[in-house]
Length: 174
Image (cartoon, rainbow, N blue to C red; front, side, top):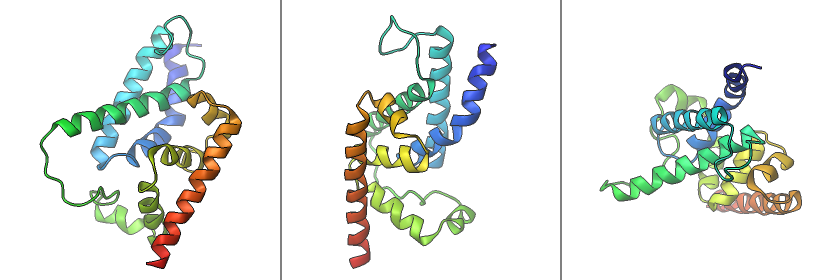
């Protein structure tokens, strides 16, 4: 199969999921779009060369897992650079703060509460919940991309759900 078509199919099925994953981690839509483009650009280079960046001797086994790995690295790089810049920020990061009015109107109050609670979880829990429930990855896919056992992922996912439930209970009590 033509590598362009093959990668194009993966792009078509994964771009919205990768964007959503990144968007929940960064403060602006534009930044998420830029980082998503970087992820797929890097992913294409790795796919074209056929080597896994973590192990120069092996081929890429799971392109979806590679894209999520590249997305995590892109987010980390973004925040690493952000801390070096002298920027005055007011308040906490607001996921809906920079979206236009029509997008904000479309989001329900409940989803905003969930996103705020999700944002207060530790990054590992955020990743698990986003990957499982927003991007629809299976336990096995998450385990494969994180190089952990399915049992470890199930346990961590349970803890992540409990932590999210605790955060939501705090919000409803307030």
